[in-house]
Image 1 (cartoon, helix red, strand yellow):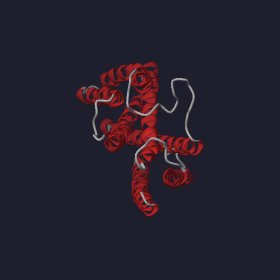
Image 2 (image 1 turned 135 degrees about the horizontal axis):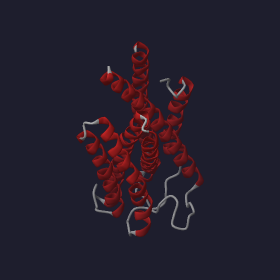
Image 3 (image 1 turned 45 degrees about the vertical axis):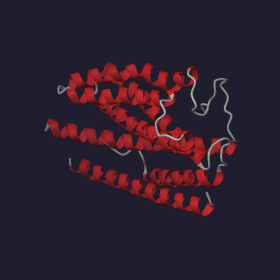
Image 4 (image 1 turned 90 degrees about the vertical axis):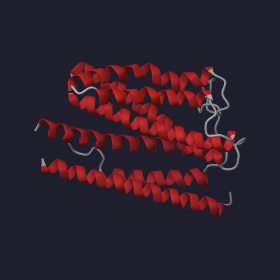
Amino acid sequence: MASGGIGWVVAVNLVIWTGLFLMVLRLDRKLRDLEKDR
Amino acid sequence: MKSRFAPAFKLLLWAWMCLVLAGAFFYAPLAAGFLGESSRILFFHVPMAWTAFVAFLAAAVWSGLYLARREPRHDRAAAAAVELGFVFCLLATVTGAMWARTMWGAFWNWDPRQVSIVLVLIFYGAYLALRGAVEDREKRARLGAVYALLGLVVAPFFFWVVPRITFSLHPDSIVNTRGTIDMESRMLQVLLASWVGFNALFFWLHGLRCRLGALADRRLEA
């Protein structure tokens, strides 16, 4: 695979990982809010 | 319950996994004897399988603690570890099948390694089914704990023994039968870094799942 092709694979994977990370971070915050309410 | 992971640690995990991703594609060399770039899947497939093993081991430890102390938080921790271990194991199976499609021409080949990981999935899938089938919380926790302790025999057997006693087309285990590691140093660095990252991700997710379980239990009690 050309290095340009690999660059795209890495970029797509970084976007997916960042998206998943932000989703978990949001879940973490929501949980903290719920715990504060109780 | 307070989050066990500080914000700085979460950011570090994000950056760590970004570096692992970059390292897997730009730093580590290709392994000999693999088609094209297919050897790079190693940096994700193997750490996910190892993380699943850690999760199943942790589930057995928490189950033992539950049987000894009868504290619901240990039951919640064991169940959460199996749930997450199941997901990591499933991801390892899928990435393994993708690699098999490239190297062996088919996603499924009845290779002993493929069969053994699916048997692990069936075993822990049955644990989740068992928990889902019992309504009484105390009974569910007790049965689940005993079942998860059985995993102390099942998981090591399928993860570590089967690959060493059967003939398989699968590449050699990272730690081979002579107890040594035959791997290029940069590949090993990325592999271990990836494993550390996946483990940190597992323990973060596990903490969240336990907190969610505690909230749900409190709501049921209210």
